[in-house]
Length: 444
Image (cartoon, rainbow, N blue to C red; front, side, top):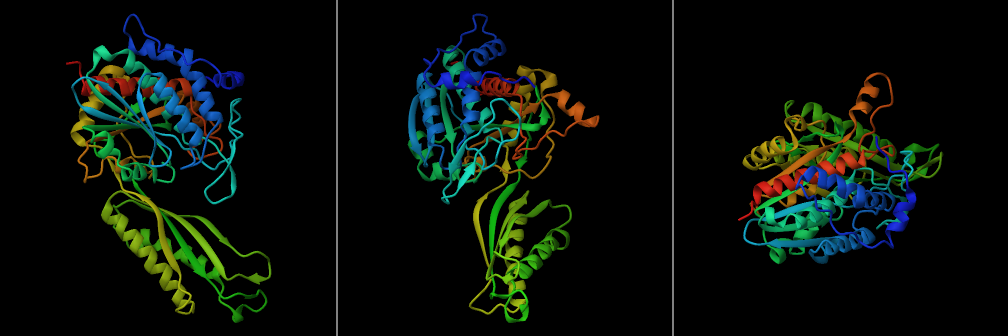
């Protein structure tokens, strides 16, 4: 992995004069994007990586993105749906194309070993202080957006139309897209003819892009289960109702939904990611709190899972003698539908990726897990906006080869060890976005 070794560059960036976009005289997009990265985007990436912010609290990131877009010559509106930023680049008649980049980090302490690793902390919306890390590659997305904006500005004679740059908050909370739309995104700036986004992927080798012609990502719902109890001494469990035991029964029973209720060929995941209760060895507490993530690949299965979770959790509480005035409660706090690519648009742009990036650059799509994305809100059926979401490889092939030969495993997204190859990821994502725009909005 090619690493950026000068942390001082990130510090100097705050006072540096914003550079003008690099223009390649030979009009070679690949060479121009590489030059842009070496001369400007590299330091911008380091800045974003070292200064991540939590969902809905991306104030400094949003401010920097607004500054960068304005410096590229783009009309900017801030505070859309909270910290969201919208940039409009108008260049004659043609389609309106939405390009989206998410910008939030995660409450993870970075242990990547990078010399520009984040040491940032931030107080979250819950009032608690957390370490913060770009453990999912959103720093790649926003850096690439600036690269795309600067290049398209320099190439205005090669395309015609309007680009809507959407800098989205809170993808990790799957709430930012919904918030921007609720704040009138399409009413204020126009309904796009197309919506595009990409995600850097640690499971793909650098130099590769991949996109589905149907489902790209699963649905995701965050479910909170509150199990009340009747407190008692640990030596006298018969005097109370133990929420830890009841909660444990719920955890175990939830897995029967996947194995015994959902049709075996319909993918689904129910993971209990958090279980908190009690304060001391010999005290039966009066409450346990469970946090779940629930995934599905279609809306019918999604609804089935959520209904079954509530039925089982409430029913187990009753079975263990919780009184009617102390029921188990189940709340869906956050959620996003399945992300589907528009088949016709995906076929068209997949061909573009192969043609413009090279036959070897495109990999057929393979769903490697049940990750989710709130980009789905931008292309929801109610809007009728064709969407194309693609993946960009972020890990050098040598790292996969080393892992296959007994070396360290490639870290997953959301891991404190997560890292990607920034230059390869940013430049390929930028080239792919430019190629898509040039195909969808040719010069008139």
